[in-house]
Image 1 (cartoon, rainbow, N blue to C red):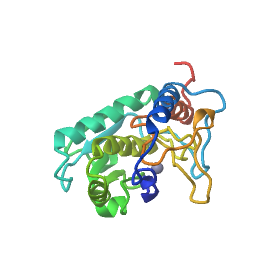
Image 2 (image 1 turned 30 degrees about the horizontal axis):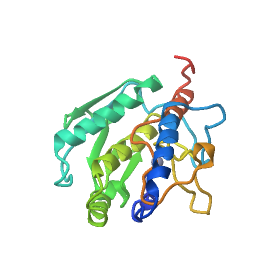
Image 3 (image 1 turned 90 degrees about the horizontal axis):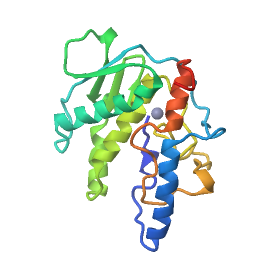
Image 4 (image 1 turned 60 degrees about the horizontal axis):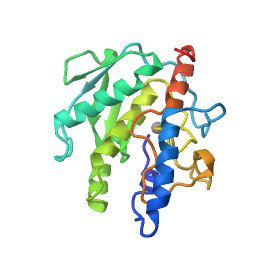
Amino acid sequence: MFKKTFFYGLFTLCLLACGQVAFATTLVREQEIAQCLPGEISTWGDGQDRAAISSPILFVYQHANAPAWFDEPLVLAAIQRSAQAWSPCGIASRVTRGSNAPPTDRILVQWSEAGSRGNFGLANLGDRTLSLGLSAFQLLKTRRPDFDARSTLQMVISHEMGHFFGVMSHSKRCVDVISYYNNGQGDTCQIRGGGQIQPGIEYRSDLPTACDIQRCRMANQKPMTP
Ligand SMILES: [Zn+2]
């Protein structure tokens, strides 16, 4: 789930001397995305990783009720990019638009306020739905009209998709697409080298990181050296 706490970091602006910090942070962030060091996998313990919901996984996109600023090819391409990025997990997946596949055979990717419960996104494994939240994206556009919401869309899709691949517990590693920045009890996520999340700058990756993929492979009992 992408909760409203996700707004942490989005609504304050970086005002002074951010350039140098941002440069160093970008390098560390890129390394963290590409490489999962021994001992770095750590979660908030809020779920139990499990095998993927099916293999292969079929994602079917329905564009109804989408925000006007995201057209269908854009959202579909984002879903395809996320599915492709999860593929090193070793579980095949396929993406199509609005087909008549039986509900038992597909994951429906939809825009639904009820389904997303006010969040940016919500994966419901029981209903086999990945719901995106119009109101959360509307709020983001209102508060940060300059912000590229396509990046948020990509991140939310990658995150929720990961739950269908079996990665359930949220990561303490800030950069992971499955991360939560905090646990709501004063504990915050970790950056390699002890860095801190900078207000106004999104640190989380848009696509699964090396550690997300490693967890996914473990959850699906795939060998660690493919
Ligand atoms: Zn989640």
